[in-house]
Amino acid sequence: MNGATPKIPSAPPVAVVRATQAVQGHLARFARGMSPPAFAVLDLVMSRWISDALGAFTRLGLADALTAGPRDAAALARELELDRGATHRLLRALARSGLLTEHGGAFGLTRQTEVLRRDHPSSMRNMVLEVTAPRNGEVWAALDEAVRTGASAWARAHGDVTMWDYLDEHPEEHAIFHGAMRELTRESAPSLARAVDFGAFRDVCDLGGGSGELLATILALHPGLRGRLVDAEAVVASAPAVLAEHGVADRCAIAPGDFMRGVPAGCHAYLAKNILHGLGDDLAVRLLSDIRGAMAADGRVVIVDVVVPEPTGPYLAYLDLQMLLVSDGGRERTRAELEALLARAGLALESVVATATPMSVAVARQRVGGASAG
Image (tube, rainbow, N blue to C red; front, side, top):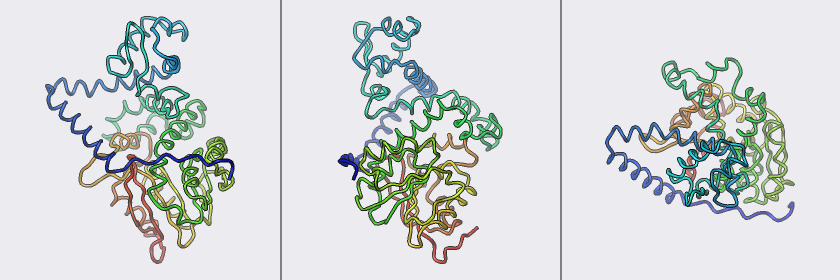
């Protein structure tokens, strides 16, 4: 082991999380139901402005500037070279929405906006910057056309330049995107790592595992397990520090590369988090078939993605629309749709485990005979 293994936070009980979400949903629907319909719709439509305001607040460095405590708009404007009046109006708007405190002309962070600081241990700064990025605003403005045609709004705007190509060509945005993915994984890893018994495997290969946050958590929970991390070279560059922080660097090989061009062979389990939802059916089947061909005969594929409940129930519905807009056929799938993809790739779904996050963990094995259904 490389130093002391950090304590992995406990995962909140799924039933408690779901019950809390249900109460929040009922209260929100009740509040809308009690408002005049015109005003309820107006509140919903204008809520996008709150997102944009939080994005500007974060990009301008205001969250970091308030780390030491409340300050007035004039002082903040001087320090950050902003317009004094406009700064006050932005802070006042966020304060009146309950996102900042406001006392005697000084504005301070709340629990919600504390996490927009760079140095916060649960920082979601990159996620806010990613969601409110101009390129995302551009594709969402074309949602009506995407619904009309079923075609990707990204492809319509950028032609043959995929979103991944675009990010490679824009290093600052690339860093924000992958920073956002790391933030999401950091918060969900304790739940996801405990959803299945990874200790039953000899080793785990994490495809597209970024900086290794989830794989490091899994390895920390299972001292006898070995790992392999696969992602683009620029992405895994930050993995050694993450693995060392979790005390698992000596049990994890880093393999820079594009898993869509070839899946490393011979591992007992293959982990694919938030991969399938960005792929159309045919491409997803191709990847799953490659994994089936690469894994040990008694191996498993562990898929982490949103599984849309049937016939009704809450899920990340607007992430599904994001996939419509930026991918070529990607989507959040139901259990039946996931099962059909796996069958086409010669795999059989064993289980789907709900977690305290919006994602579920699905486990699949080779079908008897192992042949692809085409």
